[in-house]
Length: 250
Image (spheres, rainbow, N blue to C red):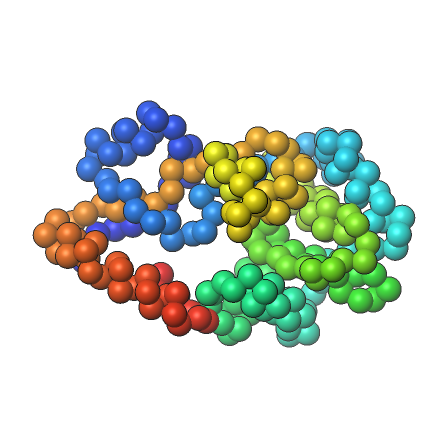
């Protein structure tokens, strides 16, 4: 073993970065593609949730409901997972992302749902699926784990309504925070070239505050071999990941 890679939920500040460096850790490329996020503080009850939103987001939730969008707590069935994969794979292909394949995702979704730690939500208009979200909880924290939607949504506000229902469920599970997972770094929120720019606009509609985590760090166990890994191994792996779509090294 050359190193141990860590991605702690520690806020990125000059002090924390300096302390990690002083411990001998080496900053490296992140494994998870979301070192920055928006964390929404959930109210004590679901009845208080809508009022906790900014006015624009609150209006979007209500508009989607008025125009007939309905959100169901979908059962953990093969039909549900295939629907999720169909929308998910379309988004992945559209954005040119290199991610793991069908079996990996379907099995991971099934495990989380079957364990009782996650719930699938599907937004529909006249029975046609518009979007889905997988919401997971762990203790007092909840997270929008994954989701996908049609690029051309016929009704504005469907995604906001979907998150609203996900947050309502999270409150029922005892969660007090809801991690929307994945926005641009706080220094790049206005950078339209960032792949997460649109996600940032949407997710910051719930709360403007962005949390930047420190990202990934390596605890080096074999310095000489690690130096070779940095010069050669990491570059080879990165090239392979960019060339071979459908799976990932980590």
